[in-house]
Length: 376
Image (cartoon, rainbow, N blue to C red; front, side, top):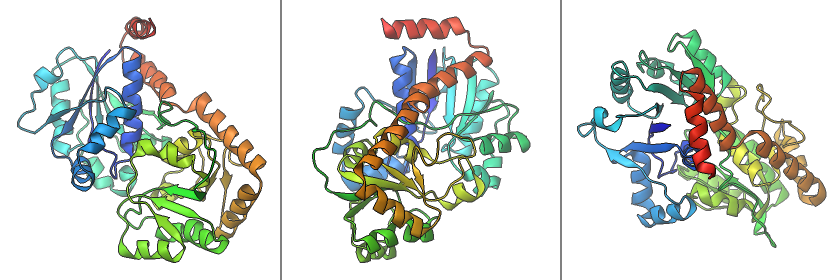
């Protein structure tokens, strides 16, 4: 297929966790022989924060982990959809795009014959419903939603006539177990402080247990206000600042355990959606403990792929157990890794996307021909 994708950014994952999955999907599509072109807005906020804070050398480093990664920048005035979408089979428009762009591409689709899908990977359909309702998807062929609750909402609200659940997954070209002969500490956590959506949870399930157990811990992420930095210091936790996502597997290998503390909107309104962090941690075979979230879609096996801490006291107990019992920790990590490899890689998601394309009338023979080219 000839595929065009409109992203906020594929180059920057600064406060842009969706870039993790999107990079993996592009890589898998290219490997299968599909022709892929990514467009992103010039001067997008994520990329600008990356460049302002860390310089263009980070883009050079990115290319070492993602050889051949590329994008085309555009401005509103430079958009020429007739040229950009000439001969295309499939267009994906990620939901971190402006309303006007989403509508403009939809209007172009109404006069052409490619297939057009809107890709939603965020909780805004629930938490910012009015804004999401203003996306004009009239001429879109459907929506790819990263959880059943989001898919159902699009259908219930009549924002679209067709929708599919398309979960995020681990990019196992980058996220895989790294050997380590020594550890830098006990626990590592990678995540942004955010918009106070999980402040209480971070204190209960991360800061307090680390402090009480006197663990050697390190935290990476951005948008940490002064009170958060002070709380980390008080808990004896080292703050590492922003960590490029492709560096996470190397950091996981330096620590004995990690935790997942989902934001409140996911816990309260979006059961079954864990975000991409657990997929990536499990793919790196680091023992994982989660604060409560409802695996309503049975993506994993709680207790075997990861442990669940319903309270801060349980988190403390689980940490003690895994840190004092390396054999049990290894068994947990290997079970989680097996689950990822069998069901939750970007290759699995591209399989699902190709099936959706067949449902939309893109010929299966064309998909097989492209795959055959990639395997020669």
